[in-house]
Image 1 (cartoon, rainbow, N blue to C red):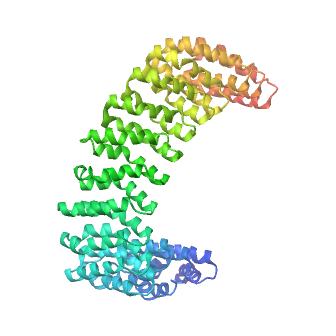
Image 2 (cartoon, rainbow, N blue to C red):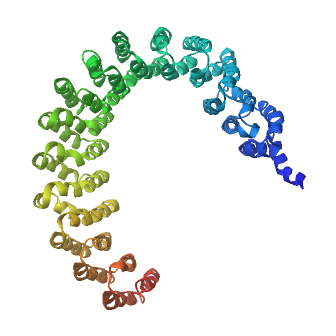
Length: 581
């Protein structure tokens, strides 16, 4: 019996050596099941040594192995046996495939968390040293991420050794190793004692930011913020600012892009006062950079940078606003799109008057941009516009542009405008809405695009909630009646959708007197699709229909449809009879 239970496990173990990669992969996914069946002792003495010999397998298999080993602590007998897992994970951390290395490092982090300090200092530190001294560069890449895991828990002598090793990695002959060191230096610096940051890590940072490879300098930019936050003395902050200025003028656009992307964190860390004379002008130069990608990254940060400079409004007004006006006519679509996303965020900093004077023209220009994406981005800010410029300015300056966009040839633009109509209705009030947007809201019900008709129908419900039932009686219901007489069957179909939408917000009396007859009349439509949608409509409205209406109007209509010459109409009519009865 025991042999029968172990047979599936034996098959899984055999499949770990199978020539077919899919079989090996499936078996590797069941590695924990194999270990549970073998027990802790056999897992340590047999399975782990076997796994040590499989490290030359395909990357997909190794990735599953690296992840599984992270959950093996209990399967090998508990924390006291963790060292036996370090050997295969050490090999996995040195493979060429980055995803396997990263997963092995995650599993090693789990091992370190579970280890006692003594075990970590003996075995984990030895593993780091082994990886550091290996010939192949991938092992040194892995070490860059492992220092931070062990550093807080090792002795002072080992910490000193780790810092020296990290410095050598920053000067490694292989660019990939230097990139790995650059990407982890900032996090490592937060763990190192302040006196050593200044004396040992700062020179490493300087070496990386002056590296000949732009991919290394690019990653070094991210460390600017970390070192700025750790700087305690004014002289240190000035030194970091000087490095930031050098990187902002770097010959590689990717490095300049990274400076633009990290500018907010840098200003926060150094302090706005220290940045006004040099770093802010450098940022303004990034807004004018020759590369569109750099300008785009800088534009996305303009609102946050301006907010950090709120105590220096003159700088924002005199330096930022002219650049914004230029960027609104930038030759790159992505730059204008980024500006459309953030432009109104400047208003709280510069105030309503300056917004109207300096930004409104740019806003209007973006609202009429030739690229649909830019128009969509600027439309998405309409909800906050009235709070910024006031209702009078909204009506006189922007409403003509909004009306133009409501007839845009791109249906997505029309849809975006439609979605903001209820909000605009609240801001404008009944009189202004009727004058500016009411007719458009009704015209959209007959649009050629289904999504537009559907969104316009949903708006009927929202407009009724905003302006009241009497307004709907005078403005909406006549348009719905008009739809039913359209020569376009899609518009006639929209009558049924409108009835369903309005049923939630109209009183029973108005619903029965004005809307139910529309549905009954639609049952005589020459198009079968409309007739069977009448049946569906009555099903959806059953909660709204009183017994008297059902008996006097609905059931006679449905039973008449049950004799229709179209099979689909007959089917849905009979189903609706059962539903509403």
